Amino acid sequence: RLTILENVRADRLIIEGGICRGVHVRDLASGGHRSIMAKNEVIVSAGYLFTPRLLFLSGIGDAKDLANADIEVLQDLPLVGKNLTAPRFTPISWHTKTPTLSQMMGSPISKAQHPAVPEAFQSAVAEATVPLRKGSIAQFMPLYYSPSSAPLQYSLQGEPWPLETNAFTVLVTMTTEAKGEIKFDRDPDVSPTITHAPLTASDEQRGDEAIRAAEQLGSQLPSEGRVKHTQDWSAVYDGRGTCRMGSDPRTSVVDTMLRVHGVRNLRIVDGSVLPSDTPYLAMPEVLMLAERAVDLIVDVATYAVKDLPLATPLLAAVSGEHEPFPNMAMAGKRERSSNMATAISPWMVAVFAATGIFFLLTGSFVATFVNDRKTQAEADVYVQA
Image (cartoon, rainbow, N blue to C red; front, side, top):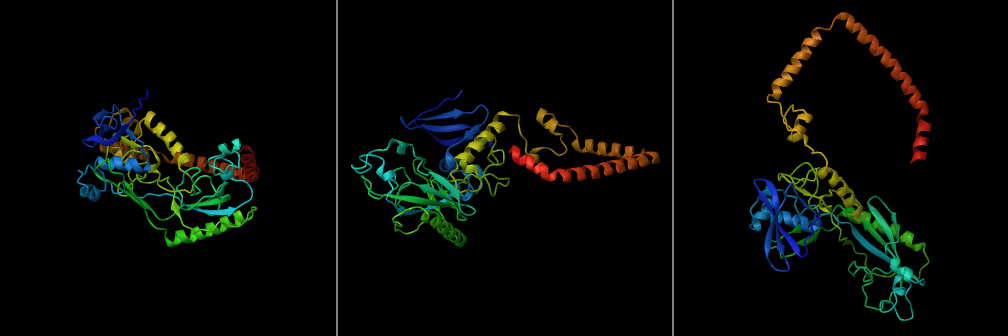
């Protein structure tokens, strides 16, 4: 059963003794507050911006940043809000006589002499995507994308209605070495501050190469010449990594089971845990992450190796049973193995040797057969794929 609360904002996680018990929320309509307690665990899915903010307001984050904000430190995780990765993009546009979306929307978006084309309203705007170089892509857009405009549909042209410029765009998007970070205030009503680091020298070089490749693509289409503007890079509003996944609490926020380091019964399931960047939008990755999270949450319990007592069988851990003296049990096993080894007679050694030679010859025959079948096997796999 799913209950959705409207006009409610999560302001703080309820953490007691290193265990997340629930969440403290504010009713934005009435201004009141209430606590919602969890039966099993709390799952945070507030996105790359507000998930790290909720952790920060709850005392989970960089100890220095928390101290500066006068928030009690419950768990020192330095990378909360750090490692922000967001693809950078830049548009390249060409004037054209062929009608683009700016002349197909009808009044008042298009000029009066250009009637609406119903099929145009089904446009995905980014009509085609092709890879350019490693970590960079180009997308064809049947409209003019002004670099000064906000990335919102049909306001991309950065000009008032009715739209004037009829042009098509090749949008270049790439990953970068440059990272960003998010700063938070202790007041939940104060918006976070996002800072993107400038491109590195390597980023600029790869960006120039991607632009040249995109120019070659766009110049092959009929046009009336380039739309002149400065070639600047902007950050896509689609971040990752601000609660990145990893095994070390010093360089990550959640483990590979999506559990927050050092806090029990608390998971994060959204794009903030993605540790690396791609030039594509994060939706497919987030969907894949959500599918995996379902397995982790509703299936059998999972255990990190470091959390298992030494020499405890996995079956015993799953069933909740632990051997009282694991070291003694291991010593007993070693002692039994030693006694068994001394009891082996010479004739058994000969039998084992003959058996080994038989399996060696058989293995050689199988290897030869497999090598003969290699080419055909690869063809079979290709056909099946």
